[in-house]
Image (cartoon, rainbow, N blue to C red; front, side, top):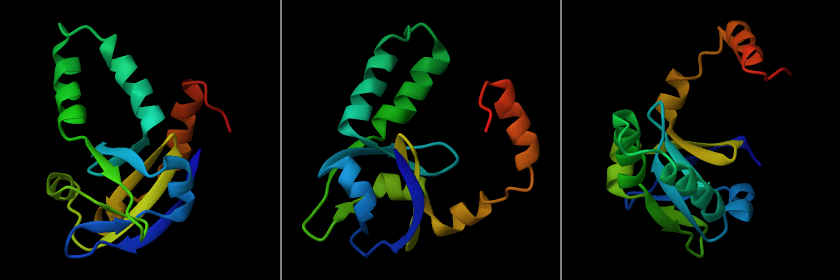
Length: 143
């Protein structure tokens, strides 16, 4: 399980340090793709295989499924960790997530999210958590 929040900078070549706690679980090679809310999603190879299997079961006759599959898989890239613990984020993914310099890596259960620091701050409004918690309880998640 991934959890925690880590701040880093991306260098001019597009390399990002992967926090050691995340590297331990991700291994030396993993998948980065376009995520929701303007961030990137990072999955271990094992988790990525589970996601692929689920998508294979979805009928291609569903327009939303086709569109989401394109969004999710066309932007995906396999990234390898170098000896300094960094990955090279492809330029198309950096552009999508508006990543230029400051980056926040966040552990979220089965994935890591990579955010530009500005977007992370913009999405960090938690004033409505009581209302959201009620909706989560309706989905069967009580804390």
